[in-house]
Amino acid sequence: MMMRRLLLAGAVAAVMMATAAEGFISKKTWSAIRQANRGGPFVGLVVPNAYEMDPVLNSPSFSPSLTLPYLDVQGRRFRFGAIGGQNVVMVMTGLSMLNAGLTTQLLLSLFKVKGIVHWGIAGNADEGLQIGDVTIPEHWAHLSLWNWQRYGDGPENELPLEAAGDYTRDLGFLNFSDYTATGRSPNELNSIWYQPEEIFPVSGVPEQRQHAFWVPVSKHYFALAEKLEELELPACVNGTTTCLPRAPKVTRVSKGCSANVFLDNAAYRQFLRRKFGCTPVEMESAAVALVAHQQGVPFLTIRSLSDLAGGGSDLGNEAAKFLAIAARNAVDVMLQFVPLLAGVGAVDM
Ligand SMILES: *[C@@H]1O[C@H](CO)[C@@H](O)[C@H](O)[C@H]1NC(C)=O
Ligand SMILES: *[C@@H]1O[C@H](CO)[C@@H](O)[C@H](O)[C@H]1NC(C)=O
Image (tube, rainbow, N blue to C red):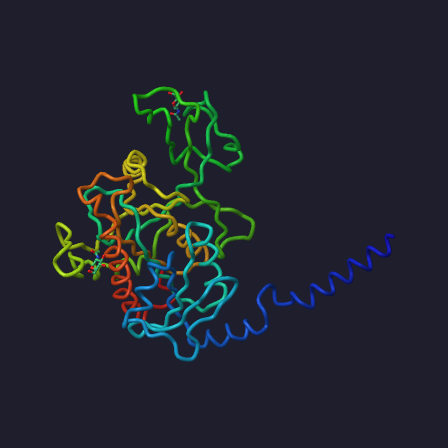
């Protein structure tokens, strides 16, 4: 019986080695990847959703590669082409942090990428900005890693596993008691405490964790983006029928915030603005930033604002009309930015 099991285990291992010698990527795909990389180094373009990618595919500024327009790997499509003389590889991640993180890692593991540009639309947490404005944050944080405190404990109580260094009270909390519509009163949901990510940068020692909360974008890319603040963006859709109160602007801001949360709540939006200084709030950039940061690859995000997250602006009921403007503005600004990377190498963080 024992012998049979061993033989069987040996046979299974042999079959696995024969079929999985290249991991889950076939020999044929590896060879296509090697061929594609001859066109590199690329600017890696990472985009969440089809409505933020399609305007690029339809733009005359994007020339698809004639020899290898795309390569499908593990459920993702990597599209090759050029924008303003820069060779690019573009990939759509799908919604939220897990998709954004794993797709970015796949991009960097497979292709010769000198830097990453990410774009899309975002909720707005800054009441001073308007639908259609395009923001370029200098730092990103992931705001959905929490330690949820038990009822009865308060700011003076240590969190579980805090002593071990797994969690911290340094970044602060949201107390549900502060958000009772009828006025403050104790709430059994108590408080959530915001946590930094555990990271394992390639420059560090494997399995020795570091922590990261505000992840900086590339200093060099951020400096280059100053030029974009002069861009003039159209104020109207459909000629002059539907216009914003002023033409949208491109603006570099301090903080962008991501979470596995579609934010449509004014109280939480105002909390995020007050506590963390967020301007765009969305669901992917911090994941892309955390991967790029750990791999030592320069990175920048361009996010146009849809309506105030949770409502409250005069334009609120027209937001749907302007969504197309917002998506197009993010794409237009990205298309202007990528050509600025001519002569900028992978080490220019
Ligand atoms: C949250 O509010 C409850 C009820 O008022 C209070 O007991 C607790 O100390 C507060 N927690 C924090 C972290 O401030
Ligand atoms: C623009 O006009 C077209 C055709 O008249 C219409 O289908 C579309 O909904 C309009 N778009 C906006 C944003 O108003």
